[in-house]
Length: 315
Image 1: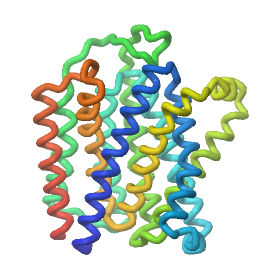
Image 2: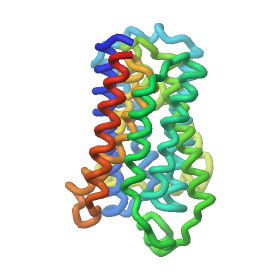
Image 3: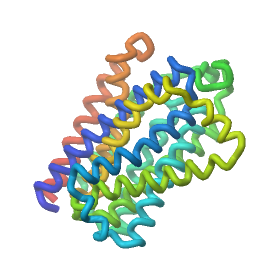
């Protein structure tokens, strides 16, 4: 791997992870303050990705490069969007609903070894000992932040904000399924946009278009159509910023995957958990508690990230 490509991929991955955390904070505040559902927020943010994608294609000058991707390539990109945005996000919300975000997040860290293993098998990418050590540190960091919780806790996204039972089998099963979905989409993207920044914006647009097409198709279900019919201007304003943040995150992720290996991009993306906690402290200090566990976790993640980038540059 070229040094420039490794560095660029690492920087893009980190900025992408930060943008994902901004999206998470905005979505959380939108749901808490406006009473919107997670499903409505996802619907808005994914559909906004289509016009944002067209703008990105035009700004980057890639509007003339659509013919550089084959029909099979577009199908793979659309599939990546469906896997990541539709299936993965659904499983993620099911996991959070069953066991809470604190428990679901660390379980989803299996995205890293899964995607690395698949990249080695399918894309013939190489992993060194230092890379594995860095990945291990990044995986271990979120575990440090876990504190003992009661078996029953409140959720504003739950039925009428009441208490609900901790459903471990359901929660951890869906968390693993979400991790598999999130770990599969980079492989699909990488197989299409590998070593080509000329089509990264197009790839982002195609993935959003595929996911949006599926979400629009679900409106044929009466209950789904009724739920989305309650979306109002306030919801659109609140989730507009989240939609922009998550779009930028996805766009940067596509560019990162076009210049760097999956074994570099995906582990660095897991820093979204650390960024989210730090932003939660800054924005919702009364809700999020930052303690010594979090500080230790940040340093472990930074150490793992630095080690991973160093290993990638010198591989």
